[in-house]
Length: 405
Ligand code: PMT
Image 1 (cartoon, protein in one colour):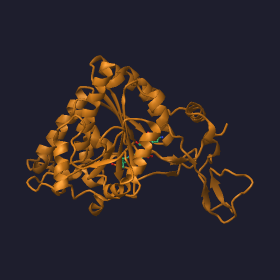
Image 2 (image 1 turned 90 degrees about the vertical axis):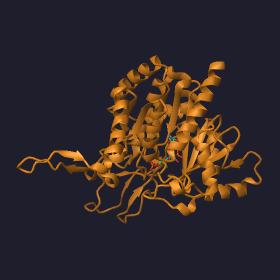
Image 3 (image 1 turned 120 degrees about the vertical axis):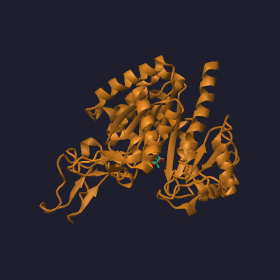
């Protein structure tokens, strides 16, 4: 049966049977099992945060691969706010992408060496002790304490992946391991998962040669009857990655758990439509839509229940200027959708409605955004600090519902 005509369960078996499990899977499963058991015992909520981009190898013995832009900022930042809200976090992340807490002092934009100095009271040979520079003491102490707290209390489990296949195996296993958590489990799928890949049976085994063979080279090529012309091009033939969100919602995840996915677009005309389509297709609880150019300042919550669509924005005066993005595009996706939405009875666009069951700071911030910002405060706000408390409130409501049934 072809992949297009198989059921989600058949597609799952076909995919997972064609790959050996990742080498680290067994170890990760053991860690996840112990972590989940610990937090089930404590009746604590646990969120699985996925973060960063997956790679698509072009060769079995991989030298080259396709990657995407995601640095893991959304996932790493959100994980910190979940921890602050009392959750334990399983952080399933792309290896070497940003991590909760250490993200403040890593990678080239925040190189940890820039935060350090040599102590003036060095020895006669000039060997000063290494210290944190005075201006960073308070901020670093705060981050260090939170990091230590999470670590010492077994609240943060870091599990890395690299390829899209590793990601799939890990997601399936961890979701199953989380089952004893029931309604206390949340899935927050911020990873940028590859949409196209080369199935294993069509992948070149060795490093694809570039110069010392006289003809075209190709990987993933799907059709023997039409070999590529001999022009020394590299031709890559990719298949769609099976969509496993169905299986996560209907099979892998714990009963009554809350599932939040993301939708990224670059075209403001498409964002809300695509987010809504995803929600309808997978029947989960929330899609958070974001545009590549404005994702650090605004997102839209698309839900199956009223208000259906809610924008969350960092007020103008509190947007970080150090992040990349195009501020002029803020509001574009909402306006585009509002004009299309005139014919849609199911869409309500609001900028000032508070979170479902929540009168928290995030609602206030939306008001500020609608007002064009509050100049009295100049501390930058991370949008994840507005997103996470609203999810916590939605999760609380869901847990209460589950306990009544
Ligand atoms: O890391 P940053 O630079 O901070 O960027 C954050 C982000 C823009 C990557 C993030 O906010 C985001 O939008 N992630 C989802 C990107 C996306 O559009 O994914 P998708 O349409 O391919 O998938 C839809 C959802 O299903 C996503 O939540 C994805 O994580 C999840 N998914 C998709 C396919 C799959 N096989 N497994 C999945 O879990």
